[in-house]
Length: 249
Image (cartoon, rainbow, N blue to C red; front, side):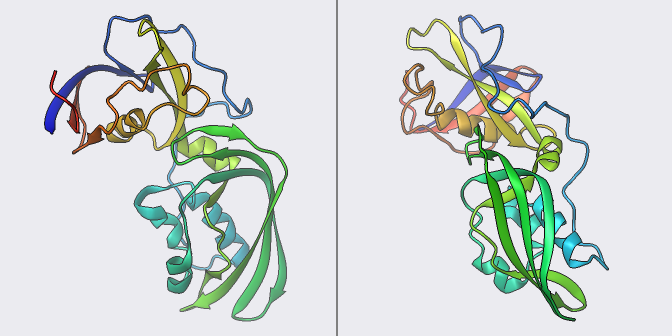
């Protein structure tokens, strides 16, 4: 059943809190990666530049993969048409640091290189960040297309970005779910791309429920099967959310 549900919410300082007569925790849960101190985004992901060499293309591709919008449209600009078609960008994003690039083979029109780095964390599609260790190595093939280098193959599934780009492009927000007693709100930290998190993206994550770690300690916060039917609108502290599959009260 379709119904327009209006919710009172606070969208201040990157925190989304659904309205209700409950106590808000004074502090949120510890962050999974201490090195990821929050920095406000200041720039966009790179675009291909004329004259970039294969190493510059590979590094820019890593940074562009931080933007998940439109099926990683920004990152696909660095790929040939066939590589873009074959790239499965779904799944987690691995964050690495100490990135190095080694050229293994090179001709006038083709390059084979390796990207290596130390894993720092893994970001899920729901925005949860967990620590990760070990080395990551990815082999990439590049070819010249109309005089410009483009990645032509071996693109791994999922996405990868460097830690500096992650800190620039992502912002942490806290979703709040009621505990089992319905008397307190429990923070569920998420990381979202962009300077200002999209309200619709926030509501979709609320509807998706808490992270696995909190699943047994909190309530869903919305009826099972509830879906977002259209864009969320924000006017001051009033958030209007068009929901479907919500029973009338």
